[in-house]
Each structure stands twice: as C-alpha cells, then as structure tokens.
Length: 145
Image 1 (cartoon, helix red, strand yellow):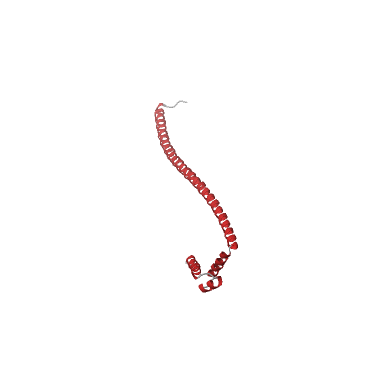
Image 2 (cartoon, one colour):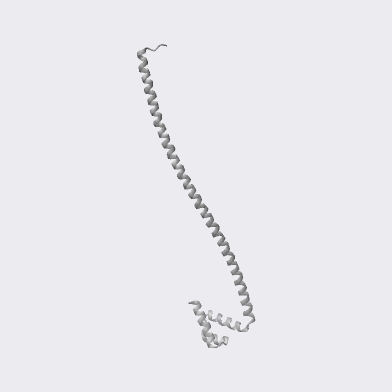
C-alpha cells in the first residue's frame, strides 16, 4: 500500500494534533484525579482526627462511669451499715424502754403528746411534774414545726 506524498503530511499533522489533544485531555483528567485524591486524603485525615477525638472521649466516659459505679457501691455499703446500726440502736432502745419503768412513763407521755393530749391530761395520767410535761410538749412542737 502506497500513500501519496501529498496525503502523508496532512495525516502526520492530524496524528500529531490527535496525540497533542489526547495528551491535553489526559493531563486534564490527571489533574481532576489528583484533586479528588487530595480531597479524599483531607477527608480521611479529618475523619481520623474525629475518630481519635471520639475514642478519647469514650475512654474518658468509661473512666467516669467506672468511678461513679465504684462510688455508688461504696454508698450502698455505707447505707447498709447505717441501716444495720439503726436497727441495732432501735433494738437497744426497745430493750431499755421495756426494762426501765420511768422510760415507760415518758414513752406513754410522748405518745399522748403525739395524739394531741393537753398538758393537764399528760400531768394527770402520767404523774409527771409540770416542767417535764411542758418540756415534752415543747419538744414535740419543735419537732413538728
């Protein structure tokens, strides 16, 4: 196959122009890809920073929750000890109240005060001196007020 000489130069020119256009298009495409890679790299870095921050916050929260849990356990133990002590004191009070006849009188007088008995009735029923009966009434009023 023989190509005429007059056709070789235009075909060669067309080939060179085609190669130049292809090179320009590839260069433009490469620049677009590089911009996308750069953008994705920046997004990846930002995401990694956010993940690291979130991880640090999570660890801080875990530590806080563990500390709070330990404090709750300590408070529950203290509460149980106090309940036990209160029960013991209540038992001791009951034993003392039952064994001491005078405390029975005062317990009865306090009960009458709580039920709304007047001063004279308390003095008469419990055989208490006026000053002691007044003291019981005043203590009850302070407790209520």
